[in-house]
Image 1 (cartoon, rainbow, N blue to C red):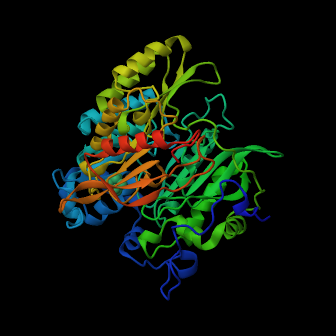
Image 2: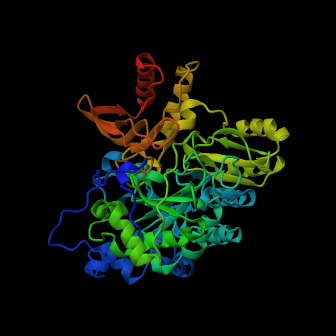
Image 3: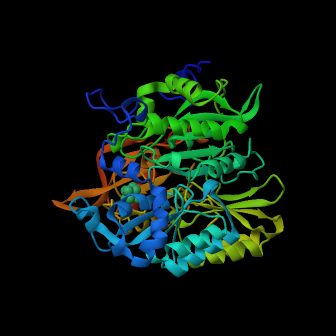
Length: 563
Ligand code: SF4
């Protein structure tokens, strides 16, 4: 069966976008099924010699005993990532030197460690273990990321085996948390509990992670591979910017299942994903995911790393060919045509107090720009248990959602959360601001992010107190041209760079405006635009945002949204 014409269905995207396939040339693109598997660059070479999964034994047996200086450089800068380990930036190196120093000159002997939390699903026991690791081995650091992970810093290689032992004892892992592998599976933070859920994606998330995470057959992909699955009508997993995504829908004849999207990703050449127009029954999700992942492994471009994401292959093939290859080469049967999900009617960040389908409540809270600490996480575990629950979720918006609170315990929980600095009020910029790691720890960063963004939120709360915004305006802050904080899908996106003020280069940001994902405010996702020449300095975020907000309110026509 062929898909419906994609331009005619809501949510479909034309295949011409900013991520264009490489121009035809005499050089092969490094597609294994077409060009053969001979490695065409250094990264492809080490991945083929020995993929990242195998470095674990060396970390446990050799490097943790010999210390940082004993680590083989190829393991350090390549294979370590597959276990969620990146060297962090040396303190004190300013952004002006990022481009002039080698990664080795920029790097410290300490690591960032990423704990993958598939579906964002955590127990208080697991949270307490992460808190303990943070306190014992990571100088109290803990950041909730916009991919539902928790990242720790200042980790020494000597401590990694003990960290893994503690994590794995409670069912957590760092396996394939970074690198050219299937990364954490984003899942609806309200899976299995929301009263208005279409389908609970937890069994599908579990099946994918149980069957395929740590599978050597999938441990050498052309680049990173991102997955998202939701069955909630708010479409709360930023599905449009994942390599593969499943969005809950109701098929008029086949019942509940998923709408399949492929080929989304941001970075410096952003491209929104596209619907293939198929309906995926819940029991087929893991196999379809496996098929899409193997298409990427076998046909993805491997010659140039900046052209290696799945979006470039989709740009060349288009959705019709992608579907045909998936059905004929990777699945045993054609998939039925399927409907698109309707426009969301509620925001997908889940901030605030909401009734669950079992009558208890879930409470979404905001760690400011995702930053929290080990001691706070330990106190949060205690607080949740004192209120009769043992479950929480991380979200793709750097938030936390506390589950299963009896109605009469909600006010006391809210007071306890406030005391921990975790607001459940839908305060405008506190709720809608996210920031990437930035210059504090990231070797690619040019500018500080979290501290600047948090300061801006606090200033905006003061300056805009009493102002009635018709809807949240999202503010996303990146420390470099990559897009870890999704600047192209924000109302206001700030891209870190040096800006020239009075002839001097100072840290600042290029402004992007008008992006967003599908939400109650916009029928479908759209990428923001760079406003040429519009830059703000690192300490000017609040000034600029305040001006934009006041201008929007003054000039706005009835019902006009910021987008
Ligand atoms: Fe680092 Fe740049 Fe990503 Fe921020 S956007 S975390 S600075 S690579």
